[in-house]
Image (tube, helix red, strand yellow):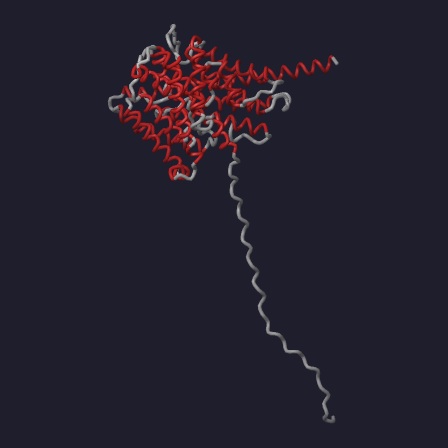
Length: 468
């Protein structure tokens, strides 16, 4: 008995060490992805602002189409499966893996490399895309690869590893371990097996701790010091309903290519994906130029300025241009997420309308409410949205108001659009069309045998009557 207990204990610790090592690698990969995306965005803005021989309005009109076409071409040619947000792929992969089906077209190290490389190229063109959704797919790919390193293939189900990897990617990207755990339950898998919950949760937390160790214990968008404020009920209701409507329409627009695949525009995209991405790049450049450059990139800098108080308000067109640029970016097919752009839309919407509507509150609480409300309306994950915003702005004093606005926004959005990530995941779960079978070589008909004239039948010789 003692021998068996020792073997079982060794088996468990080998499993833990393999998972924790993979979680640390996932955290390192997400941090490296973060640094690369920051470098890509800073390069874009530096090129646009510091070279007098390249006027600012014209830089995006060259960079965006070229970057979009390059990202889509690389994704389709070498890294198939790296397109899009990444979260729907993680959801689909976890469900297919639970059925015992192959998921290498959704999560793999090849896809992770393509997600990072092509995503950074797209940000070099100023596309309105985030890195949080792609980080989930990158981390899920690493955890899925780690399954083959376990001492036994049945130690933990591959579906649970994929789920944990996706949540670990969110936790490391936002520096919000608690939000990663909630996101795993509410959006990605919506279930955790009791026997593996502790190991998987520790995996998610470890990935977030690696990111904290490398980048410091920071708040993603700075620290919002919210003082006591007056009546919050009316703003919560008004902005909850407004964000619900805007987010529901946003989700429905993103589902348009999947719900109406035979529409002329989407048929043209299927036939010429690289050219279509170039056209989307031109639209992104035009929208950014009209909006004064506020819609370029992930929106982190604008959101951070509004949250920290460096910018007390935003122009009226800031949420409009960011909204349009994010939709067009998603249509282009580049690798990129919608988390950070959605938060930027919400922040700009709150900051630009608080004074217009005449609410007695300062702009900072309104900004936080709209960030959480719009994100909840888009993803229809209200608890995750509230916790993410609370942890990113250090706004623990707004827990009740954030939860309230996300629940209202989610209720309104669900009347307009189905759940975005769940619907997109169903599209990825459809079996890819198998390549057409090679037709069998034609069988040559045998040449008919030459017709021979039938020989006349031989007649029996009749006896001669003549005497010999």
